[in-house]
Amino acid sequence: MWDSTPPGAPRLLIIAGKALALDITFDRNVVQKVALSFPESPEIVTRHSNKAEDILLRDVQFQAHESPLTKKLDRFAANLETLATLDKLSVIPGLNCHEAIAGIYESVERLHLWEVQRLKETQEMAEKDDAYVIKTAMCTKSGKPIMHTRDRLGMSLDYWQEKRKLSSKKEEKTWSLLVDCAALPGLDFPPIRVSEHWISADIQKANATVEDILLEPDNGPVLDWLDPENTMLPSADPPKPDAMDGVEGATDQKFPEVMFVAKFDPPLVVPYMLATQIYDSTSAPIDHYVTTTFDELMFPRKPEDEVHSDGRRITRESKVTVYSKDGEKSTMVHRSDLWIDKIDYGRTLTELPFSHPRQLVQMLPALRQYAFLSTLLSKSFGSNSLPPSKPLQKTETHSKRAQFADFMSGISTNVTTMDVSLTTQPHLRLRTNFPFKKVTVEVTFEINLNGVVEVVYESLLKEAGDQGKGMRKEDLARMLEVAEDLGVWLEFVKRRLG
Image (cartoon, rainbow, N blue to C red; front, side, top):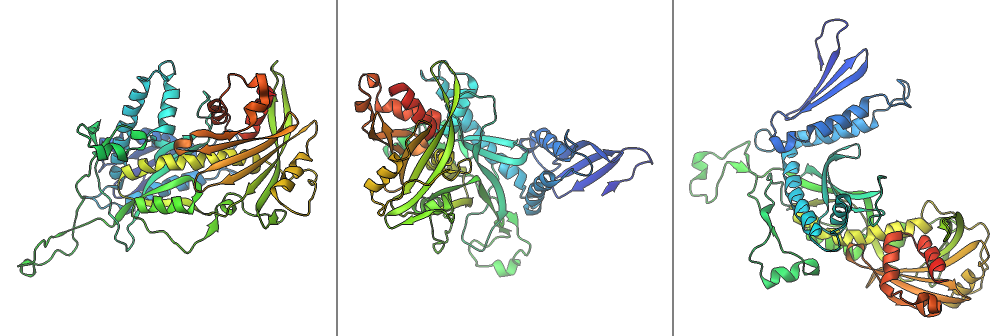
């Protein structure tokens, strides 16, 4: 509603709900101020209000390139919908969804700060700046919780970022889980609980058993997760006293009809088996009748894609920036073949109900595997690549021998070729073959939990001869972790070992 104001004075538009109030001040039909308050919420909610106000103000103000005729309110509408959804699901008093999400943030933030401090005490991180250590904790530990960020209201649990091994002031692409609430469906699923004590103040369990230690990935510290009390609401129709006589456990309270939801931003393509494990870990149902192959979810088929009896082949060209030893910059054209030898079904993770932040933390190592894989493949075969400028030499059969002949035929002074084979089961592996010193060499990478790269086979260093002395398989793996690009990695190998 509009607040009554004298003619000519700034006008106030009030948007209110059960547990929030949004005041927007207009002067001559231009927004001057946005004020967001949560009258029914504790300090763990209100302390983040200023960041939310700044985002909402940017949403409705005219930017340098905007005018009254071109200004859009899409972002404001999306952020207002986020606030409205949580407000509608709240039951005041008794259940404040803003407080419930802020409680998860408080617990995971304590865990994140504890992990950052432990990393700072390691020899590897002793000389790194704070930003690098925080990014390392985000990409290898329990993620980094943020409230109201990247022009979006709500809590994000960031768990992966491009160029994580490099120091950069630029905002790189980030993978997150957005923590939200939704109406509880007619399923036997745990309802929402409001608490900021999902993990103990000490973070680490003091008297961990052998079983506790074995359950932790990499035998890391045993986290002391807690199970808060159930949040109960007064029943709309409490049972009559006489009807309760002799009924054990009769109560005038009920569980909230609300649950926590994690939204994947961006959506993540994973193998069907991993998706099933993730859904099972939160006791969420999965639709077993939706079947699409992993590669089709990653790269939807196009009319020009070739279909072969021994697998799918995707041929693309991309431009790779190369720096000489003198620092001169040039561009190389890479023509790459992606072969999918074994059919594996997949699932795109978009939204998942959960009942405890521990469930989100435990799935992060596996999510990072496929966030890293998507980065590697998108650089050579994604939207930034193009169909080949000229057809590769055709062969009557499509055996591996013919495959090698195809990509070898494309060798020229300005085109670099690479053959990539992807398998997701039983291990996530990328097998690369490429011309090197007039022979074809192979390097097979395995992408493990947390996006850690391991070279499980290579014939490159032997062919490199003296120039390969002092370099190990671990160095080849680390080079790919830093480059996050098969093309950049290949050019580095050619310059360093060629």
